[in-house]
Amino acid sequence: MNNALMAKYEVNGELVELDAQTVKDYLVNGGGDVKDQEIAMFINLCKYQGLNPFLREAYLIKYSGNAPASCVVGKDAFTRRAAQIDECKGWQAGVAVVTKKNEYLEREGTIVLPDEKLVGGWCIVQRDGWEHPFKTAVNLNEYNTGKSMWGKMPATMIRKVALVQGLREAFPDKFQGMYDQSE
Image (cartoon, rainbow, N blue to C red; front, side):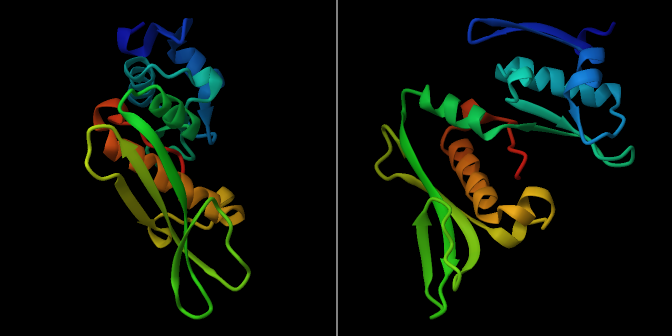
């Protein structure tokens, strides 16, 4: 078997063993038929970023044979890794709404009142050694597919996008090549 289609590595003191058949049998979401190249990309992302897909830290998603597969990382893997970075001094994240009076508000968390329109999400990351905290804001229209969780929980999803973007931009060396499913 091709070495790119298998890997053994350690994550948090646990041995993770991945091979093409295990990925195909247990770790592909969406029902599409994955190609060897897509499996190799997934295995190598997990190996080089120290992710355990059996704990749902990473997903290989393919919905159809024509569409490319997506290698995505769970939000908890982002926040767990950020909490272990010495320079990371915390973060805040929430939603951006427009009120009935056409006022723009940012609110921590995911609460959107009945008379408000959800328009985006935001994240502030405190980083040691930086004079100012890093802030990012994302537009709901750029991410909302209206399908699956986006249709059911758009505030939660857009907050996740803002959070992982903020962490990735504040610590690019720690999150290179990692994208959350909501993105």
